[in-house]
Image (cartoon, rainbow, N blue to C red; front, side, top):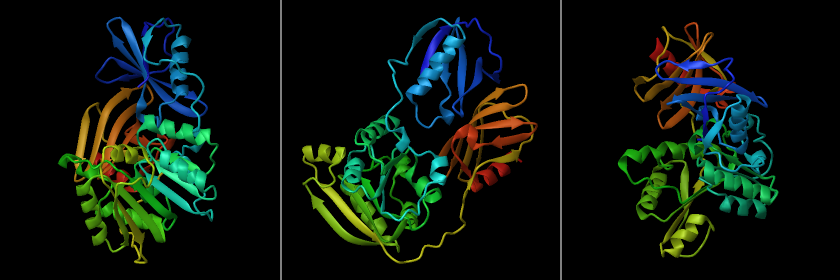
Length: 378
């Protein structure tokens, strides 16, 4: 996370929130409609200032500039920083879709649509988009470092038919992509997550397969490729048990097929590549107990929350990590977990009410999250 160290600033902070347990202050800044928070932490005569990462989707050069300019506005003597050299804004940001853009995206445009889950640096997706300019390609990637590489590649080739999303794929498919929309889904060399405690991180599960079926058109294809025999076997078994897919092709090969970074890596080591092609059949999918996104909501709270408060019930956990007290409101940095999904969010507390707003977070929460919070906070 970008940060720098300064001597005590000569300019006083006009508005700030103070941590309820630690010597840390929070300051709000706004630039081009984006609300950011800067943390001030006192350390033996010097102050460490950094961006609060909770409501930032992807750390960019402009965030580093904001931090540097803020320090200069304080007339502070900058001692050291990890900002390094940063110049113009990153290329290709127009191809990065946040949740607000996703909600208004024209998914009904009559062109083929393809999704790659775990698109990495974009090698596969860029190649496909260049070869098929009349189709739309979407890639999910949660690693910010390699995602920036993919954005640069899209800009380099001036592609207007490829989009990237820093999102969990199953969450994206469940809440943002309408039913019967995609022509194909590609899952190329996903992390097998060998350890048992990481089981829920695996991209292939019975629930995930049902989510894939929801988003795919009837007759749509799902391509799964891995170098791991155990993962290949488990995936085939799970799809075989699903009423929504039929195995169309199984291929074991030592030859390049998808031309991805990991394919080249594993083939160079002499590994075998396992590829499966599953087709979405016509079995209808009934959406049981549907959940949906909420733009904003409020939840009544008895008293004030404190930093470090953890509340659990069933498969839902709310961790209120840091509470910053203010004159008019408190700002609460929280982690919400529901099933396999986790959200890092900011709440505000005012007069016994917890407030959630996407303007502060650039993301949405769901109806079930709101209902479970209400039960916990009664």
